[in-house]
Length: 234
Image 1 (spheres, one colour):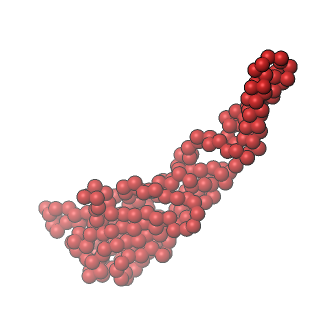
Image 2 (image 1 turned 30 degrees about the horizontal axis):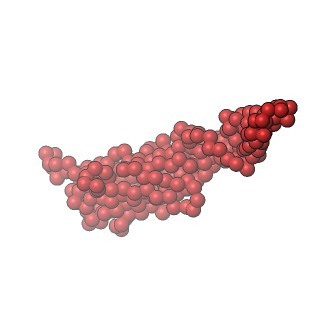
Image 3 (image 1 turned 120 degrees about the horizontal axis):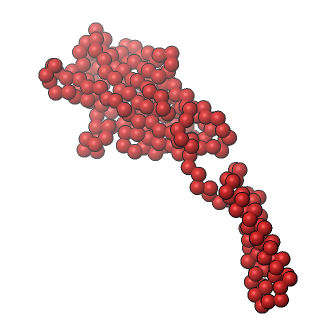
């Protein structure tokens, strides 16, 4: 891995200072010359090992700001009910599940598979910040004056949407979920993974979806908007 500029400069200065101390100790007749030579040797050796990459010093760099990602909903996406249709639009950013009344009423789970590819330009060692989050949950209601019921389930005593994000391919990037969002801080240039997004739905809310109606769940994945629709066939 290439050294960060500040680390490279520090190693060069350590080498130079170490060489100066060794030179001064050789010319000096003071009792402290041995200690001076020892310190110089340590600096010279340390700087050399760091410059050669034998010893690595963390640069303290954080991943670059979220940049360009290609995001594609895959046809392996599914629900826990039988659908009469599944349609992914040409952009790959919208999927519609169509099902009959009984299956729409009993819908308990939606599973999206999303291919996420890092399109940022940089070296293979460059790391980029990535995030995905649930940004909108539709609702149903019995009548115009009835209570609105979100179609997705909630967890943690109603503080978070019941959703999980899981990377499915071996190796980095790794993902850390926080509430209804997920983050990665080791998404390197050119890397790709399939992110599985699992929603727990509320059948008691889906039961109030009228024939011909549809509900929507919206995510922001790598800066791109993804929509998931459930339509009840007439």
